[in-house]
Image 1 (cartoon, rainbow, N blue to C red):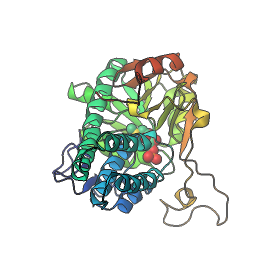
Image 2 (cartoon, rainbow, N blue to C red; image 1 turned 90 degrees about the horizontal axis):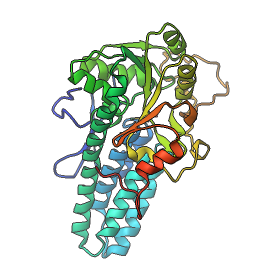
Image 3 (cartoon, protein in one colour; image 1 turned 90 degrees about the vertical axis):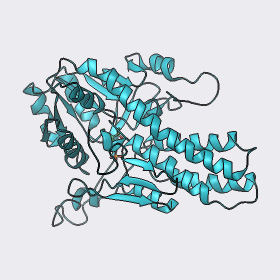
Length: 364
Ligand code: MRU
């Protein structure tokens, strides 16, 4: 597990006073480990938009912290005016990125907390919102640990796994999702080698997954995205494990662009393809992958970002979807904090995660 200077466990967290959101600036890795201290709503929006904080669970924790901080600063004579201003802040944060459901999920939790407490004083409501943001962070840690425990038996006989993007500690608060079983294996003294797709165009695999695995002492090998087929054909990996940004009710999985290609390869080469995600990433209100909004990002990420000189002709059209949808039929199992879910997903996701009367809750 990565030890992050004086903040060993928490890649995203409110400070003890509940006045600042502290997070690792993921855009600076792997060259610099820089912590951001944010207090303004606009700063939190910007951090999510620019991927300073990224990865579905981490975005949810950051958004909850950001909204709780914003709520603290609201000046209002009564609850209705407070709530109106609160909802404006909430809508603004929700607009930062469209695909990861954890963003909206965490903001909704804070909204429910405000409404549940509306008979109390505004001072008490604001304190309850800070507590809720901290609870979301703590639940994330417990969920990811439980995902690791549920996933480890599936990988017990694997020599090596392949992963795409970053679904490790940096993408959550601790452990991560796809990497949680890897970290638990490490805790138990097992050697599970990880092949890391570099993950064009933003290189979350090369910059973040490779970095955090190295920090944790996990053996890893970096490959370009177009090498995954060769790695599977040469039988260098026994399974694939990835995270998710949104899992639809039918088991379709939105995750970082390129994930669906890896899933197709895994099917061809008869490797199990696992998705690891907390309940907060499962969107039972979303019927299938067709209903998931896929974020499109700037052409510069493809043509310029990592190059000392522009590497494609000026004016070339660029299509830069940040995510794709892996059809449920290619997913061997979904590893959650409540156990591993197998097909048929339409039935089994709902059986494990459908809220019993009332709003969604994913408390552990
Ligand atoms: O654009 P990003 O870097 O936020 O995309 C992240 C991913 O696609 C991750 O794989 C996903 O959020 C799972 S994180 C535990």
